[in-house]
Amino acid sequence: MARTPRIDLPNFIDHLQARGFSVEDLARSEARRFFTAWCQAFLGDVHQSTGKYRYLGFHWHAFSYEFTAALSGPSALEAYLSLESQPVLVIPEDWRNNCGVRCSGHGPPDLTELRDDLYVFPESLEWSMAFTHEHPRCGPYFAYGNP
Image (cartoon, rainbow, N blue to C red; front, side, top):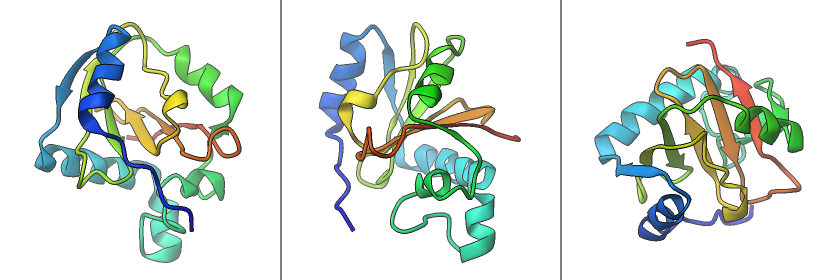
């Protein structure tokens, strides 16, 4: 299994701020609560089939292996970038080391160029975007939720 990249949180925050986003760090307990809710909302079929939310090392494999219906590639990015502006959470695959952020700005942030495993979603869990380190071969993935 390929090793997942790990974002450097200060540089990641600088990346978002340079693009006009307001950014606030998430505390570890907050990140855990939000990511747990995200897993329950989007990865239920993986958990039901395997007993875990992570499949083959990555949470986004729920989308790539079609446990969860999602748009992928350019159509996913188009749907995501067409969303109205609202605060979103950005949590990395390895949220225990880099807890993630809450950000807001002019639309959702395009994180494709970072080529990292990042999950973006509003607190309402009405949708989710999964950016991957394997882009453009795999991902990104966009899914609507059932909060």
